Length: 263
Image (tube, rainbow, N blue to C red; front, side, top):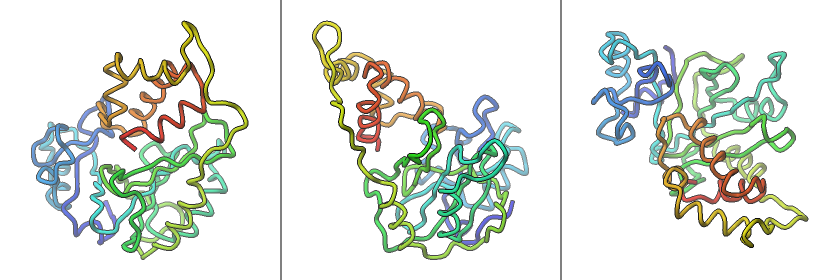
């Protein structure tokens, strides 16, 4: 696998493909376990992690590696989800963003997304939140065309499958990252009230409050527990729970999702 030299310099690698039921679940190359995979003591250097993959020491299943973002070296990851049309062309928003970054970009494991990695040392974009999800607004919500920006507390499963015309360089894109973030990080506006009255005289917000008190699975996901280690899958699980406890009030669902403690 060929990846940027800037990434190889950091001790921030995990294994992928160890669990055949969830190939993106991260495992520590030190402990060979998914538990506390993002503890700095459990992260591996590039060569030692690749050696585990080559030697089959991770139960013979490790197929690749992932890079964990730590928030202390100016490296950001942008994970574009579901951004190819059925004919294989890239949606225009991502074409424009990738062109602006002109940085290392690879095709994701699913084949339906991209990963771009940039250096932005002068930007503290997300602070303690570490990551965020920014939907592309011109598509149906169920298509989940979006970009996730990672500053810390998240990882990208690397493929080394360079996107057409991509470079192996990770240049300083502080200005471009801030501009793109500002462009898509806009509060939703609506002429409709986010509150509606439901059965037993409770509003949707009150019903959600009940869920956070009585549904332990919702509470765990709400507070950042990620049982599968697959960010997209666990985010969808949280949205499904919110759909139930928000009575399918879409505006309340998405406002709650983006304002949850995890984000």
